[in-house]
Image 1 (cartoon, rainbow, N blue to C red):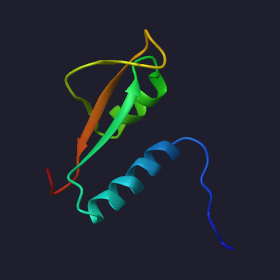
Image 2: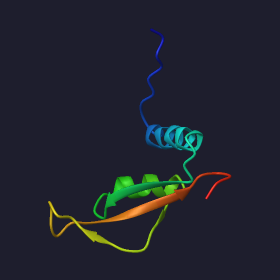
Image 3: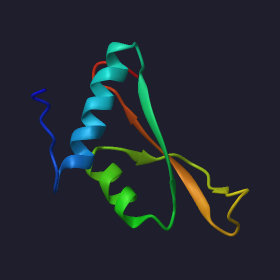
Image 4: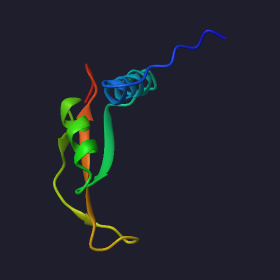
Length: 79
């Protein structure tokens, strides 16, 4: 088949960039990610990928007292 599979460091960022490219091609102006506040690895990934935390914190309906925040990133040449 010839499908290249990438593993190891940088895979998460590569996936985020693929999604950003696809979303921009679909006309999206911003990406959003909702991340639990105790998920340090995901927070670090989104920070590396240029996301910033939006105002506000939400308490999980299914896992109180866990909270999550929305992280956003404007797409290049757009919003």
